[in-house]
Every structure is written in structure tokens, then in C-alpha cells.
Amino acid sequence: MKVTVFVSPKNTVLDPQGAAVEHAMKSLGHESVEGVRVGKTITFEMEGSDSQESREKLDKLCDGLLSNPVIEDFRYEIEEG
Amino acid sequence: MRVAILQFPGSNCDWDSEYAVKDVLGISAHRVWHKDKLPSETEAVIVPGGFSFGDYLRCGAIARFSPIMQNLKEFAEKGGQVLGICNGFQILCESGLLPGALIRNDCLDFRCLNQNLLVENSNDRFNQTTLGKSLLLPIAHGEGNYRADESVLSSLEANDQILLRYSGNPNGSMNDIAGIRNFTGNVYGMMPHPERAVGSHHPCLDGLPLLKAFLKPVLQTRPAEISS
Figure 1: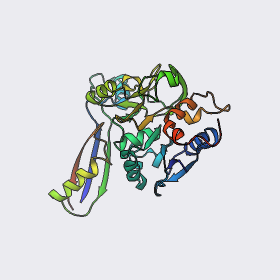
Figure 2: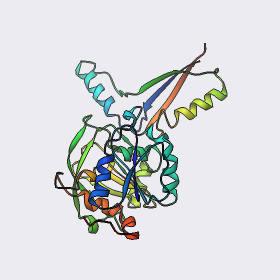
Figure 3: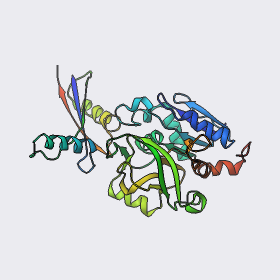
Figure 4: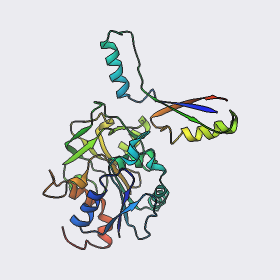
């Protein structure tokens, strides 16, 4: 299965990159843009299928290595096949 | 060997730390590779600055899982003295030995300058009597912006766990925090580089009292082999 992990800064945590990108978007005339946050995506292949066991493994992997719970949130998508 | 200086791939202040502790303060110190064990005679550990594992993913995120980190956790739990400097501070936060996290500087620039710092009265070693009211120390980081949730921040303040604050905040750190300690008072972390302020070839010498304060328990059991 193919896994895509999305890591984003927590809403309560300042995101200097997001603020800079928002500023750039506004200066290009996109005045209506609000709340830009810059995160990252991590993709990988993993043996197995979408199951409770896989999801427990993924939660463990995401919560510590791939994201830091103090400052970041994560979610992931699983593509079978 | 009394002071262990951890060495990860990408550490670059390991030699400076060894020089400061061994050659300047006269305390036996060695670099210890991250895949090796912490020697049993270790009395204090410095987690030095640099870019461990290229700062990939997040600063300190990969170093945190190095084999020696389990050793370091056990050492700290037994009351061992630990100091994380810059990337070392980031590693200690990632590993949960210190609370909070360090994110990108609010200015988005890498800040490299001699920084004025205000000393807090934290404990019997780190206070304005032992260190003076302010210190000048080099900083050099892109991710030194200290973040913690409100409850962590208020407990740090209430328990005097803040060691140093920036005078003129260079990175957006909450409450101007430049350095903290754990509740017990044996794990320390700071963004400024005391090991780069110990000799006449350095821009300032304020690293000496700071390192001496950290190494006080080591110096008390047996004084330095050479005087500084």
C-alpha cells in the first residue's frame, strides 16, 4: 500500500513560513487569502493493507518521528494496490 | 573520561566543546560516537551543536532515535548532568528530556551574532550572583524559536526553570527564552554557544562561567587537572 503523511504546524503554533508565504500571496494581489500554513508531505510504500494493525503502526510512526506532537498535527491517506 | 560529548553525523561543535572542557577548564573529556555506549565513568554529558542528520525532518528529530539516546535518558533519570547546546538543545526537546520545541526563527533568517542575554535566578548554580546579570554569547541558528503550550510555559516560569532570556529577541522565542532546565535541575538546554566563548581567539569569554556552572558538580567531586 502507498501511504501519504501530511504534517502541518498546529493551529496554536506560530508558522513563520506560512506568514511569509501569505504576505507574498497578498503582495501579488491575492488579498482574500487568509491563514496560510506551510507543512510537509511524506510518501512511502509499506507492506500490508489498510487495517487496524497498519493504522496503529502508522500512528506510532507519525507521532514522534514524522511529526512532533508539541508543534505539529498529522494525518495520512492510504492507497491500496 | 569524566565529560562525554556526543557526536552525531553532522555535529560540528563537538570539537569546540571538547576544547572548552578539556583544554580550557582542564576536565577530562572525550567525544562519544552516537552508536557507542556512554562510558560508565561519565559524570556529565554535553550534546553539542551542529546539524545532526542534516536537520532533516526537524532539527534533532532523527538524532533522538540514535542508540546512545536511550543511554542518555537512563543517565538523566539517575540524576546525571546533561547540557544541550543549540542543536543539542533541539535534540533534548525532541527526546522529551526538556519540554517544548524549537521552530524556525520568526524572521526566517539564520541568526549568527554575539547576543546579549539576561541571566535569570534559576537555581544555586545558574543565577545572577554566579553568572552576573547579563552575558554576551554567540548564537548561530535558523531554528531557535522556543515554543511550548501555555501550561508548560507557566510552569517553567513558576518553577524558575528559565536560565537565560534574550535581550532583544532575535528569533521570536516565547517569553524571550534562550535557555531552560528541567524541573529537577540536572538537564539544561540553551541556544547560545558557551563553548565558542572561552578563549582569547573568541569574541567574548562569557562561556566560561556558564560551563563552570554546569560542571560544578563534576568540579566538586574532583577539581580540574589544570587550572584555567
